[in-house]
Length: 558
Image (cartoon, rainbow, N blue to C red):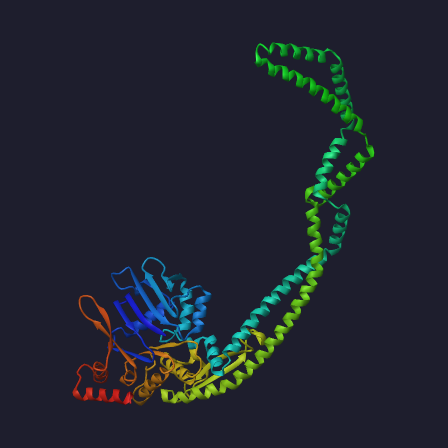
């Protein structure tokens, strides 16, 4: 329910705040005092279209915010959780800023949100009835929700909607799976040929590196053999010639000189190492020559293998190293054909079961709606005469849903219709009822469904008493008070018969002066008779008028 409302720089309002409680709160005041500004501010806060004209003259922005208690509104708390907009416990604060030179901004529990989010949560919090067409009753989804709540099937319809979502997701997955399977089957034979060809080739990235090195070596066999032999001959000749003797004699000479200058010892050691390295090099070349074998057949085998790998790489437009990964991927595609068949069969079976579950539940929902609709019609029509709509006949039409038997919320669409007089044709509410009539029809519906779990905990009436008076006005007031026993009700009224029924009473006054301002005052037991007397007698309030006002208040509260 609405806990409080604050308005700053809105139209003629500079700053005003008010609190609300459970039950019926009536708002009264002189014509033109600004009573409807409260409704307009709420509507704006809940996502109505904004305009810079709504900003108080001389100000650059206006601000509207309100606090709500969601303790008995778990659906809205769940919505906030899903949107990651939760506040402190069960409290919720909405705020909207409207600027002259830039788009307005919305906030939920301090979080910046699109204005659409204010609209979405607003439809869960407050049902506004005014000439500006804020009636939730005009929305077909709300008409269906009211009938479903009256029939006690709201949870079943939510379950049906969930099954509908699962069906849509499963059908989409099956379509994608079958599409992929069809595409793979079109190239299944070619796929098998590719897999067989690459399997026979058995590409291995590690083999390729070893093979390339070995093949390069074998490709230069003659050069290796001749070059190594010539080198060995030259080194052997050097070893047998004076080179070795020169190195030896030079080393001995430097060794003797090193006794006089130790710095020459390093040069002597280097000469000895050169002699040793020369001998070792000659020995290594002799061993290599002894082990080396020329194998033309092996070279030809490696050449064919490398050629096959490179040919396959060119054919499949990959590098030779990537052939192995390509084979794995093609094998996966081939295996997917069989796997897709299994998945398709499983999905088809799941869809079949979901369809059975949906149809069974939808049939139960249809039966419940068919049974509840005439009962709701009787209950609403029973309320209409007392509300000044004696000639009106309310009707609930159940027609095939646009989505067929498997539409998200069931096989039938729900529409509330009305015939406002005997000589008028039945039509939808938005076409047949005026603003005042629609407010009273809505009141009749809410009274008829008062004991059901209504989706919106607070309702605001701005024109429920338009065109009525006397006994009918008194009944409308008592009905509003009755409704306040199950929901929070805020009613802007100019009729004393309605005003006396309020559990709480707010008076709106426009303060004349250099700057126009609006004041909202909560009236207590002492102040209420004076306001009721004003509504009864106009400017001059007599003792008789005040006595009448007191009598009306006593009778309303007896």
